[in-house]
Image 1 (cartoon, one colour):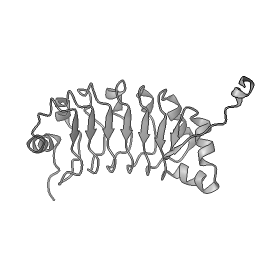
Image 2 (tube, one colour):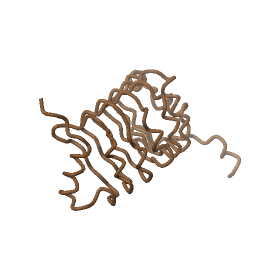
Image 3 (cartoon, rainbow, N blue to C red):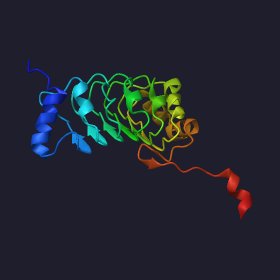
Image 4 (tube, one colour):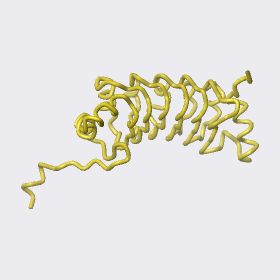
Length: 192
């Protein structure tokens, strides 16, 4: 078996290809490494100016070592083997978008640290109950979410009331699963 690619090796390759220093780069793409990356190791701390980090399509199991990324706004971790959201607290004050579709996430414990998160793409994970879904109500800025392909969404979509049930619990959402959320404003009636 080939040894996994380390973040350090991936960054060296990226620098050669991009002709840019990782410490200065605003966007770093380490997706689809061959062999895949398995660990988010301490080399990530060199990405001090990075605003968008892509680590999708690897074999990462844990979110880790984000503490040096003080400017990170978009984190792309789709198509990995991530099981939980531990490790996000390091970027809780800056992260605006988390792309984490096609992982193994069942529980949303720890999501509440994401004070600025506006966009959450987490389709095709394993969230299956409202108790977990409700943790998303702790995100004050969340307006755009993709949740399709989670057991919870599949069950309620099959019954035909997913949009209604989800938006009732997350009233601030403006977009769900790619569709604009249109709410009937009952309080505007007296204004005409």
